[in-house]
Length: 361
Image (cartoon, rainbow, N blue to C red; front, side, top):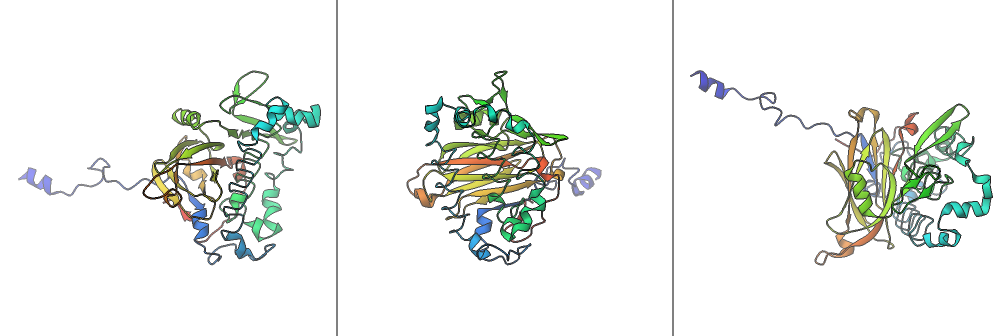
């Protein structure tokens, strides 16, 4: 009888050993993407701060014909594309000068460029776009720039996006004045030691230096996969690859709170890709809107960093509309991942709201 009574007692999650315990909280806060921006359908209804003061009508800035569309600076015809300063079709120009951008820079500036980032008022200092002007000046220019802080409508076009100082076009990237050599994998080499380096220390002001992550342009997806397996792939790199319907996978290790912006630039004009973003193997979003360059921005807050690191997985897949549903195909693209760093969270960002933002849970 006692045995029968025990069998009738309902089991709690504690008795089940957690087998049906509540789903653990996803370790990210909010995100936005080109799909969610496209979902606004040219209207800022529900968006706060509400954009009113723009050089042109603010509604024009969220259409597919805007800078967020495939003809904009994020697309294949922009600076991240094959014809841009970090594109694969322009690298051969530097062979004329010995094969490195440093040689090109030296041919113009001579030795005057030596140690630019170790001096005051350098591009990474408080006098640059990552200084206090990010909070005190940029949001006050107009309502377009007001939305360039983390998770703003136009954040992907701003200082912490792929076109900003932390990305491939900035001083930390392959065209930066850091005087570092680059090996066959795209890693930076300190010429004085011959060792691989992944960070750079620059003066922020006369009393403080900041350690920044270098932005690598890796030469192969195979090497990126090798870094992923070792847990060494961070949120500051780009690489070109070819994706099919199964998708290319990238696993990044995040060790500090930050805004992470993932941008997919097609090699061919107007082509589209789907982007799946996972946090600790939980799918949080799929960005799949046509006519816009694919991107996703995710906010990892300080409260999300409940452990030493967070794994973010990104899967890049071809759009079957571009490739065909019956006959699969593969398309070339470049992925650019930019992390804002925790330093850019030293002051609160504008608290944006609207239907283009979603919570991770």
